[in-house]
Image (cartoon, rainbow, N blue to C red; front, side, top):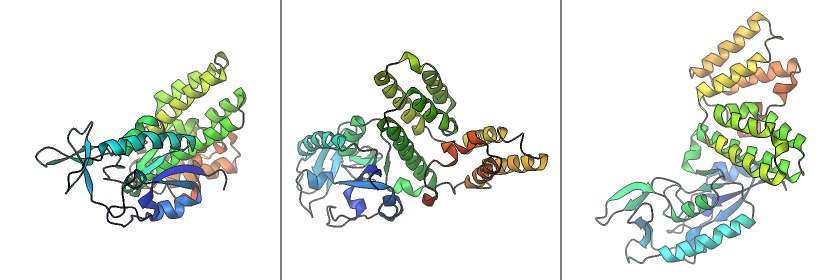
Length: 316
């Protein structure tokens, strides 16, 4: 698949034996199901900056906002070497046009959050960020990022993958030499998906699209993309989803019998209460939208934001 999502991944998660002890942490979801849709770009900060395998373990020390990277036993300071490599590597990754990154949890180089940082008394606090992860996220502030272990949470997994595929559709739109009509169509088809993340950003994006003719293309695109990625970072909740599902049900009202409408709203409420997974009300809405050919709903990416084979909406 030449159009696969290009995703940076900590190399050990892909099964590469690059860890300090010579091992790996191969992740079955990343290397299995997800790999059907993404092209993984392996990155191992320690090995790529010139350290051997196996090697002496390291840890972060000092100020969590600007820690030092030191070996645990021989007390060698690897900070300068790591930061110099990080600055060069993010430039290389920018040229590769990455769409996101999956980091290794807890790593002093690649941990995304809550990495241990030790004070001068040897006491750890979980307030750190891995050195490479920090540089990467500062260099690519809008790209979707996650950690391997957080992806075991069904909601976090869906949130991350949803953002990847939305970004893919946006980039596909840009690569197709979009017209004003193309931008408007993109926004229209994502309205329910954006509403599930937050009304504020949807309203801001709506106003931007409404005034699209007042912008030069090179001014409109970055503004819209920034709002898009900011919106997709906002967490969805059962309450937000229930609101969107009720809104979608409104487009079906004229076609449904009173019993059918009552059934649909009851299923939505059961989902909101946590008694049913999200896939149930979505499937029912997709069924009715297809049966009655409600084109607005059929075209909404909210109902099909990512391949069904990923099975990401089976959570309450």
